[in-house]
Image (spheres, chains in turn brown, blue):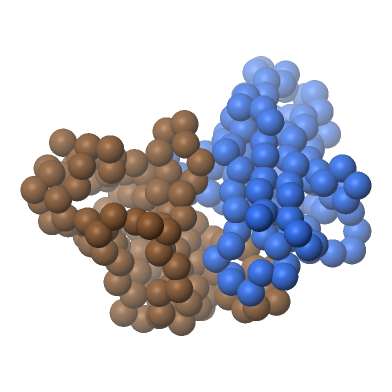
Amino acid sequence: ETGVTQTPRHLVMGMTNKKSLKCEQHLGHNAMYWYKQSAKKPLELMFVYNFKEQTENNSVPSRFSPECPNSSHLFLHLHTLQPEDSALYLCASSQATQAGSYEQYFGPGTRLTVT
Amino acid sequence: AQSVAQPEDQVNVAEGNPLTVKCTYSVSGNPYLFWYVQYPNRGLQFLLKYITGDNLVKGSYGFEAEFNKSQTSFHLKKPSALVSDSALYFCAVRDIRDSSASKIIFGSGTRLSIRP
C-alpha cells in the first residue's frame, strides 16, 4: 500500500483533544477523498478535493476540518470529537475528469477511538 | 438518484467451490461499476471495473464480474474459492453522466467467508 499512505494508523484521543490525520498519495492523482467507515454502516463520503479545491462536504460536523495544501497531501483536523466519531477514517485518491471512469485508491486507514 | 444494493450481508462458501457475491444498481444513465475488497485492518483495494464493451470483466486475484444491463446487476464471481479470499467486498457505481468525480456510491458490503 505504498500508493496512498495514512498516518497515524491508530489514534486514541479524548473529547477535548486536537489531533490531525494525514494522507499522502504517490500516484499523481488530482482528487482526494475522506471517508468514514463505522461498524455496520455504509461507507460515508465526508469530503472531496479536486485540484486542491474542496468540491464536496457531505454535511460533516464542523469538528472535522479538512485541509488540502497540494494535490498530494490531505489532512483531517479533529477537535472536540464525540465518542460516536470513533471509526476507521479512510483516505482515497483518483484521477478526476468529467468523463473519467477512474477508480479510487485507498489508504490503509486510521483507526480512531474517542474516549 | 443512483444507488447500489448488496442483498447479502454474508456469503459462506467451501474452499474450491465457485463463489458469487451479488450486486444490483440503479442509475439514470449508463453506469461505471466497480468492485473493491477490504481485508481486516486495511483500506479498500480495487478489484475490477466495468466501463463499456465486453460484459464479462476480469480482475485481480482471479475474480471476474458480469455486467447484466437488463437485470441491472454486476455480480462478482470466482470459479474456485480460496480461504484467503475471505474478506469484505464492496460494489460501487457511478453514473457516467454525472460530472462530479466524487459521485461514486458504495454498497453496504458483503462479508465473504471461505471455509477450508
